[in-house]
Image 1: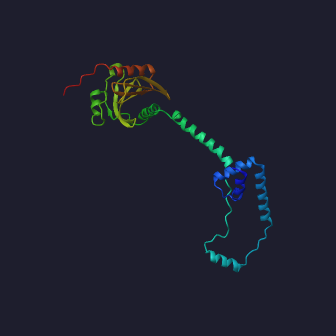
Image 2: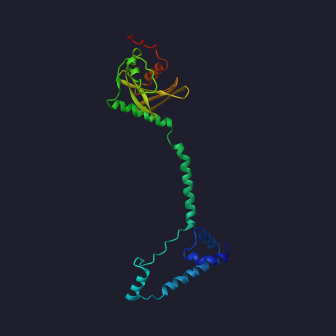
Length: 261
């Protein structure tokens, strides 16, 4: 922007009549041109002098009434003072910093957000703790796999495998319906001495996976996928006992023949 351009726009700049882009161009020129900056200061001094020395006369009551009547009853009594103009010299770096922060948050959010597996671990542990605190440990109470397995018929869209592990030191307590991973699932409850083990299982579309083990708040949580099923075992038994239990689930003993009817 040239000095001639600024001289054309300087009065509009003083009266806040320019748009943001023009105001920024004028400001940038004033920062590098002492002559135009001096001219602006001269106009501002003249404006202040006129405002200070101007004589004001109060209109008579009759004249004021006639003017208000001509303007209408809704005319404002005072002209609102112009709002202070936002200084774009400060806005630009602030806006740039805000954009950088926003981009950093958007990039980091997926990295900081818990994974689906982490969320499922929390779900499984919460379900196990709730079953121990409430009276809803099992829906069907039985140590007989031939009683527990048929109980799920019609309640799930799959038939969960149920094993009798009493002879191996893990008697079956019963089973219940639970809700994990946005779907109904089977929960089988086994006992090891005075400790309870919740075994959650539901169909999986993934291939067989190796064991994943975590410990949260004193509970051991083991997860694996086998033969088209997701398995989650949760308990406060010792890791040795839980490992033995999982070995029996992965390679179960021969099933007890179902009694003839």
